[in-house]
Amino acid sequence: ALAHYATSSVDQDRLLRLASADGKAEYQTWVVDAHRTFGDVIEAFPSLQIPLVAFIHILPSLQPRYYTISSSSVVHPTRIHVTLGVIATSDLPEGRQFKGVTSNYLAKLVLPDAAVLDKPKVANPYGEQGKKQVRTWPSIRMTIRKSTFKLPPSPETPVILVGPGTGIAPMRAFLQERHAQKQAGETVGATWLFFGCRRQSEDYLYQQELETYQTSGTLSDLHVAFSRDSAQKVYVQHLIRQQGAALWKVLAVGGYVYVCGATLMGTDVHKAFVELVQTHGAKSVVDATRYVQDLQHNHRYIQELWSA
Image 1 (tube, rainbow, N blue to C red):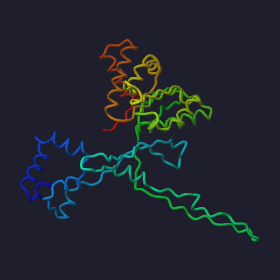
Image 2: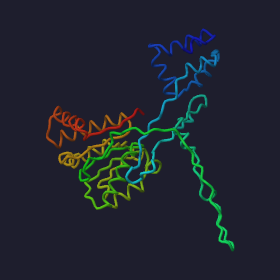
Image 3: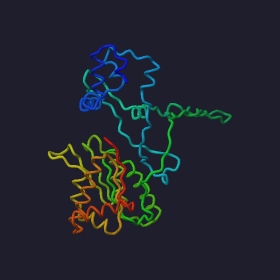
Image 4: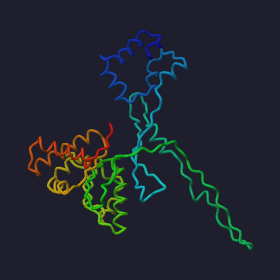
């Protein structure tokens, strides 16, 4: 559609190629991989003369962003926690910058400061006190969708949680709820967590919380992969293979598996579970694959994955 408004034949031919099947690889490299926005593309083709009405028609609508809730509604019934990565890239060609629309918007929201808004109380003979100003909270437009991520009906059921990066969001909610159940005197089954990030010093999300849950016994086993802190990259699927024998025992007694994160990671983790079922469950590749498929069919292996 943009090519129609190019007054230069060179620009028009280039735009048509980018939109063609033959130019698919070039489009991937020049637009997608380079994080070029509509504005960047228009700047790159100076002969484009697009009427405002046509531009609004061509420009796609801003799509909603979906984030997994990272808090338990049982523990925080009036609040919703969200765990997200703020997307900001500044080392692009031509000095361009790319910023995620929603993540940056949320990151820049200014919360009311109690220290500034609360007037100090002043004693006087009549007992009058200083009044607190009404706090103005930022607002966003949002909706909540039903999730397939739900803990097993019985808290005694063991669970295996796999959530590297921001994929830890629903796992954090599960840990809050399992901890509350344990505090209420209920018998809570074993809880395994496999978390991964690049470096422990930079992006080990909720480290203190996880260690506290481990100390309290809410988190039975914590396994963390720091892919850039060692000579050989280690990811969550490697740790799952290492713990294969113990994880097979969890599955054999009715344990549930929850996986959240990037699609590629989900594929690798699924493969690791098939392998551990094959190895420690003494099954053929076909039977091991069918076993994990049955877990998925019976909602005992639940995934929430997204494209990186």
